[in-house]
Amino acid sequence: MATNGARGYWQRYRSIPIVYRIGVAFVLGSLFGLVVGEPATQLQPVGDLFVQLLSMLIIPIIVFTLVMGARRLSPSNLGKLGGQVVILYAITSAFAVTIGLAVANLINPGSGLELGDAEAQTAEAPDIVEVILGIVPSNPIDAMASGDVLPTIFFVVVFGIALALVEQETDSDDIRNGVKAFYDLAEAGAEAMFKVVWGVMEYGVIGVFALMASVFGEAGVDAIVPFALLIATLALAVTAHIVIVHLGGIIALLVGESPRGFLVGGKDALITSLSIRSSSGTLPVTMTDADENLHIEEEVYSFSLPLGATINMDGTALYQGVAAIFAANLVGVQLGLAEQFTVVAVAVLASVGAAGVPGTGLIMLTLVLTQLGLPLEVVGFVAGVDPILDRLRTMTNISGDLAVTTLVAKWNDAVDFTSGTWVGESGETPAPADD
Image 1 (cartoon, rainbow, N blue to C red):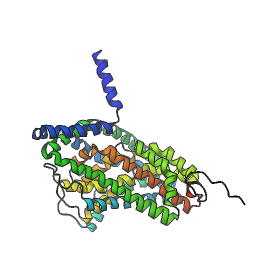
Image 2: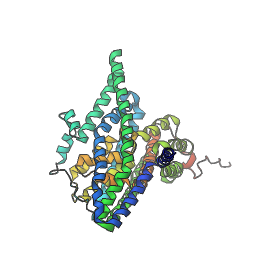
Image 3: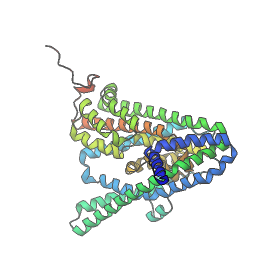
């Protein structure tokens, strides 16, 4: 009976989404640190184990998920329309992380809070030329073994696309079967890593509690303001990106239509994404809005929106810029132009495959911080407020999906701007006027 009771409690505990359990751990750990004070810092090793587990995931996640992502982006699967979609997604993601960096540099979230004994691991900052050359590894295996993120991403993407080209061009069944076996291995590895990520995030409930108890035990109430400032910074950056890039640059300038009509047409998807925090989960609503409200033809949105839910991560990329500045401020260092360029490159390249990973934002943040040599403890800190941050990121992703889809539809004469929300707020085609 006792065993059944314990199992029932465990199942009820597991039924609560992990992000909310981590959020509760964030709050309870913070309160524990405030109440207990300095003795709470003895929990630091428990939190350090969570950080170490996250570090363990980095290279396997990159290798397995990016090989699968490169397979989806093979030239035979793209063509003219697909090429337009992928390039636009990459461009908007680059703008997103740049805007995130700009807003974060302006507000400086994290300043005033010290991260205990954590230190940045970077030496003297390299210049931009060195960073660009450093993207190409002289020894890919050594880059993986050293945990060098950007060269690993570059090699795996190139290798994955090369595999796809070999598969479509070879006349040998043996080679084709070998490539398929390689992809099957990568897919199996990715699924296995998802299980490992699940286990790490389960432990993350304890790890986040310990990290926050240690921080607040040492810093006291002074630690509250930086987290509130982090949320405010992301909210401002998200607003700026949607207004400047999605509404202003794409809809108003390139499409030449009303941003209001676009927002009214996509409001169901945007609201849904805020509620469920999942681009994939929102996809049916996004496709319905594109079809019934924005009057985009199925041949475009049936390709661009599912692909966008997989690889377009404007909100997540933007967040990497904000979080990188936050992390740098926690250890009292400034990111130079070269390091900030690195953030842009890692965020855009990693978005090819990381969208399929549970806890995408936190995993990508781990990659960025590792490349910059910044402390991974930051991942544990922001995990507690991630349910709030993730809603803002997902809404930005959905807005970007619909904006890019609208532009590609215009370029391919696959959208009707004379009906739907483009000419009215109801989402319905207005009745013709009397003669």
